[in-house]
Amino acid sequence: MSINISNFYGKDLYATSTVIAYKLPDISSAVLKNFYSDNYIGNIYSSNNDQWGNHFFMIYPDNDLSQQPFYVLIDPYSLKISGMDLTDIDYIIPNVKPVDTTPPFTIGQGLSDLFAGVTKYLPYILIGGAVIIFLPSILKIVDEKRK
Image 1 (cartoon, one colour):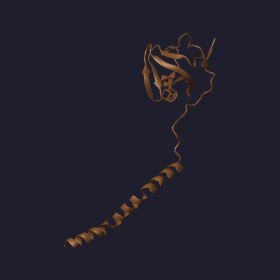
Image 2 (image 1 turned 90 degrees about the vertical axis):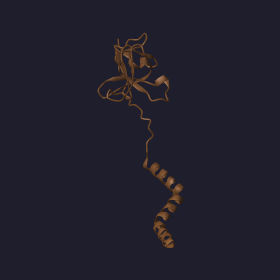
Image 3 (image 1 turned 30 degrees about the horizontal axis):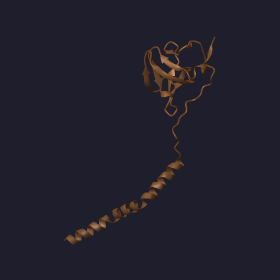
Image 4 (image 1 turned 60 degrees about the horizontal axis):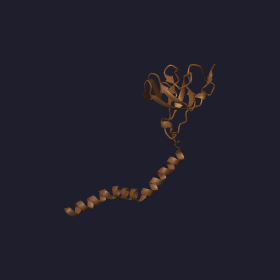
């Protein structure tokens, strides 16, 4: 009898052999950490799958939702959940893309920041420009007075 994958959410996950924690639900993404036999991996928050059909458990470090989650490939021979069987999982939950929490950069905001910086330092910019323009003339006058 297959078990719906959502039945594993909220359960503690342990390693029974070497388990790799990935940054994204993709085996080609960056490796964040390795877990070894009998290591506590974390509390399962959700699941996801990649474009090739590999399934992953999503886990937040220390169950802290403000941290970046990591993903563990679901391998029933490398993972253990107390009192549950991982060999017959029904993966019926639709694929949910990982959330990119990087704030978007907008051109309008960038221009606004640029103009704010320019107006803040405008007097210094004008004085510097004037010095650069008039410096040769000033040096010429100083040099003539020395002679």
